[in-house]
Structure formats: structure tokens, C-alpha cells
Image (tube, rainbow, N blue to C red; front, side):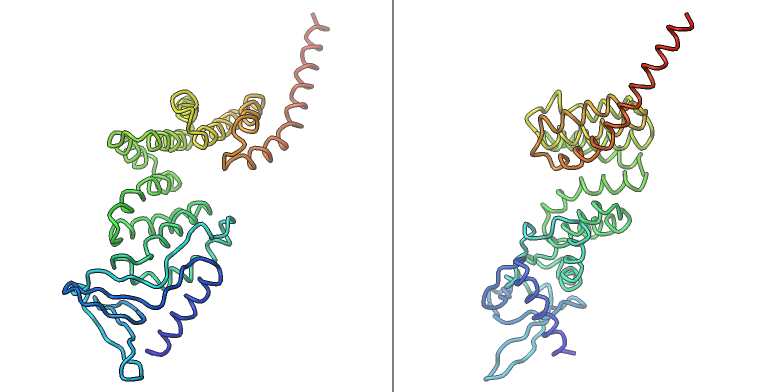
Amino acid sequence: MKTQNFFQLSFVLGLMAIAGLTSIHAQDLVVLKTLDEIEGKVLRSEKNKVYIQVEFRGGKAESAYNLDQIEKIVFEATFDRSKLPTDPAARLTTLDPLWKFWQSFLSIPESPAGEVLFARAETLIDLKQFDEALKAVEQIEAQDWNQKRKFLVAPLKVKCLAGLNRFEEAMVMAKQMEEQSKDSSIVAFVQLVLGEVELGRTNYPAALDHFLYNRVFNPTLKEEVGRGLWGASRVYLAETNLSAAVRVLQDIIADYPQSSIFARAQTKLKELKPLVKTEEKEEEQNEEKETTTQ
């Protein structure tokens, strides 16, 4: 079992290194609260103990330390999320085995477990797997050693709640975030979430107000403005107002080419243009008929 754990760790870290997801150092460093340091290979964490393989008299030996003895662990592997695949399905395929290994280290200071789980939660949201994403978010809230990440995960929780049609909870949490923060990027994000909530409720006028808020009050936040316009196009489509939907999609393409929503706006515009032409022809024909009957 000990040998299996060691080879499992080596295999996972090897894959991460090949994929460019990690920076590999010589070995792990366990720093005790007594300031003693132990170098070796951390194998696993279970039942409030961390097991580390160390070199001893020309061989290898396994030692265990209670979590309350440990100040931090400097792991040989550091997670680089920028190297993950952009496609959500491929990203999840990459993240799942990483999380399977790192999950037992989530509460251990300096471990990359929280970064891996945060990226996994974002990916699950992209795939609309909101149940699993919410579990990941709540695990970060309950167990992550990094207090800052517990705060940063709040927007993901709001997205999960809205995605699960728990609109009241999403609304309350989003408004709390807005009240507690003076950061314009947080306010901008909350407006987008509130737009999603109202769209889910089919309250289209309120949804439009929220989606277009950033264009008026936060115009320098290009990404948020672009995403808001995308939300507005979805509202117009829900109202079967094709012409209005086309106008805001054209605005995205003309004014926000760096937005993450740009490619989707291009695709949707291509779909809608023929429909708008058909709609315009029908309107012209109806007007001609009315003129003739008069």
C-alpha cells in the first residue's frame, strides 16, 4: 500500500509536469511548529496525519506527523491554472485526477489543493453541472486553508444557486456581496448575476436593467459590459425581439472584440441574421396587404 501511494504520487506529478501544470522542485518540505524541517516525499493525508517518505540510512522510511504539529508544507508541485485546456470538458478531464490526489490536502497550509478545487468548480459551472459545482464550492468554504479563497469563491456560489433555480438565495447572497464591497468589479459581477436571476424568473424588464447596468455605470470594465450585452441579447430573444437581439450582438462584435463572449456573439449573429431578414420581409408584406385593403 505504501509503495502504491508513492508511485501514484509520482505518476500524478509526472503527468502534471508534462502538461506544464506544475513547477517541480527537489522534494517536499514539511515545516513543524517547532521550526524543525523534514524533507521528503509527502504520500498522503488521512485521519489528521500527514505521511511522508524520507531517506534513512541509505534506504527509505515512512513517518507520520499530526496535523496540529505542522506549520506548513512546501510542496514540490505548484499548480499553474493558466496551462489548463480552454475547452471545459477537456479541462475537467485534466482536473479530475489532480483533485483525486490533492483532495486530502485541502486544509493543509500552502498546498495547491484549493487552487485545483476552485478551477474544478469554475469548470463544472461552465459545463452547467451546478450540483457538483456547489459541492466543490461548499468544500472550499468548509475546509480550505486559504481564507482569501473562501471569500473569492462567493461569486461561484451565487452562480451555482442561480443555475439550480434557487433564485431567492442567489439574490440575497448577491446583494450582500454588493453591500459589503466597494470594488467596482464585484458590483459589476453582482449586476450580471442579478440579471441571470431575473431572466430565470422571466422578469425581463428587471433582467435588462441589470444586464445593461455596467454599460452605463462601469464602461471601463470591457469584459463585464460585453457579458451584460450578451445577457441582454438573451432577454430580447426570450421576448422574440430578434431585431433588438441582433443590435446588441453587433455592439459586442464592434466594441468588445476582446470579450470572452465575442465568439459566441459572432455565432449567434450568423444564426439570427437570416431570421431577421425573413421577419422584415413578412412585415413588408403585411404592410402592403394593409395598404391594398385600404
